[in-house]
Length: 252
Length: 175
Image (cartoon, rainbow over all chains, first blue to last red; front, side, top):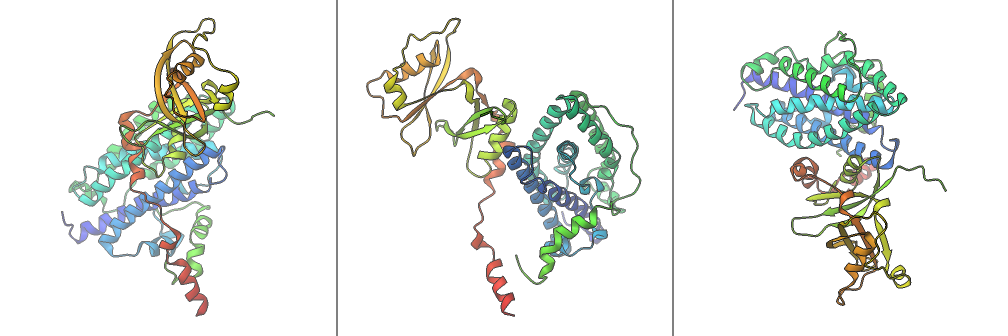
């Protein structure tokens, strides 16, 4: 279906959030390359980082088809304040438990989100969701296995997992937030009702926490919508963009 | 020397339906699930694959042609308490080619299975054998093909020459 101008604007705004989440998480994940606990996991997690980067590119490209914006400009020449990712994905990589809990929380979210996006009446989004979900099924299997392994492991591994979970928990709310005119898209069955998906996420996460011997943290939620960033974000963007900005006219 | 690595698992891969499983290498893992996932990431990121198997190395009997010359295995080898079970016998024709599944048979021990595999006079020249008890093998599920192997199919290698960067850097320098 073709979108009128107001739907186009709303769709572009939402696609930017989705793409930015993937991009920034991919960047944080990639920081483990060369540092993961064992060689095989180093390769596995680098693969996951690369996959998430690929997903970002897919969402940016659909956005470009609506706005005509160049994707590289969007990634490498925006100011930190212009990024729309949730803060959860920009937090420093922490220890292995922290990165595993974050990736698992995100993968659980992404899987639920993609299942719903497959039903979108906007064909490019539905088709992309079907493609991405194949990879996401694997990611979730991988991070769920780690969540159980560390949760059920030693006192130390369980303690580190619980600490990571407690720290990340308040950030979950931003995953389910959306831009001002998003409901226009929901009305037209172009995008899913995120409130309903959030409830589903809660349910799946709770079940899995029990399997991994981890406690549900207090329900506290971080205030602040997307577009607000942590103190760690400018340094991340600086690193992400520094090569591209050395020679702004270069084509890669 | 103490080995601080996690246990080793051998990895076997079936490229496409109808082809025999081939040994592609090994991974370290704490359990078969992790071994299978690691095998997927290490060995199936790009090449074609239908199915993956992993088996703990410690449970596999390896014999080179030279070792077999020095000690011929006997069909009657049957350790106390051993039960008849299924074994997969892999053969490596020479040093360039991988171990490939050659037969699957029931035997009271790995040695005995190897002796049976060696029996036919027409056995082709083999540099090395590996005997894997089927019971210790973990296989990828056919329902997992979609998430395990399909994504790799759309990811061709990109050669460095596909990127214009080198030429461009030269142009920039000349400016």
